[in-house]
Image 1 (tube, rainbow, N blue to C red):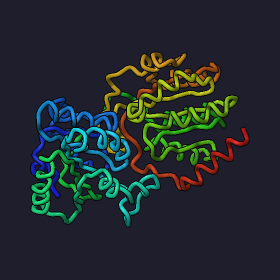
Image 2: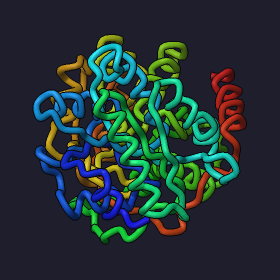
Image 3: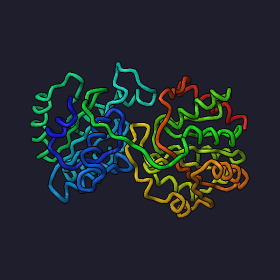
Image 4: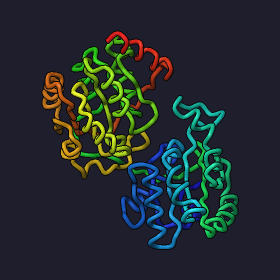
Length: 373
């Protein structure tokens, strides 16, 4: 279905969301049509954030907003949907557009399989009426469904369009780039070289994929790494849990700007606990690159000041390999919780692969290695 037609049929002038590769056509349309515009389009930190923002828009305007997201974000919206939007509470109408990763019968990555199975059921459990848009869905079908949805929205109920792979078409081309020169895969190679045999917890997306391929290229074991293939925003908390229980072992966390923003409260918990064996590296390209490249707000905030305010004893930002290598060595010797922000370009190899081991194998190998430390 033509993405512009879907937007036209919904008839909303405010969109907020977290980007998703399944919704790339919609994301590119919004960036091409609105860019980042507080009146019409805001990329939020997480899906619950989007939902609350949409509620505020409705309270101020009386109009119906749209929240877009990957189905992995359903977990983040359960609380605001149940305790804010629900018709037994404030009856705030919202149209959700949800990319259906892990749809049953369609091959996908392991982190999407179970979420794909329960996507529609979770919506039903939350009282959200849904309609699935596939590659063969017609405009007339969507128009008819939207008319039914409008009746529910008037009653303060919420509705959702669930988007199958390849269902939205005719996306405008949008180029996402920044002025940074450091390439993420090379940054990870430098981190691997500095960390030696220390355990690494890596965030979801291309960072974990590049870490896996770096180990392959080096002829190294994957036992050193925990690849957080899902659970965006939680890698640093996983790393904290490991670090607190392996106090004599240095632990590295390779994070991303979008992931840190998604659950930034974890930095306050890290700063409070101050594990002196944890090095937190935030690779910041100011983009949700793994799902297409749409911008985050990370280019407009100061991770160093934020981490210091959260209680990190040491924090620094680097934008060249000479400084990165110096800070990696210093962090190893410092014996204090440290944050290193690394300014990074947008882009990855076209032939970047995916881990060839299963998530269970990754967990088991990592745990066996931790037992030896």
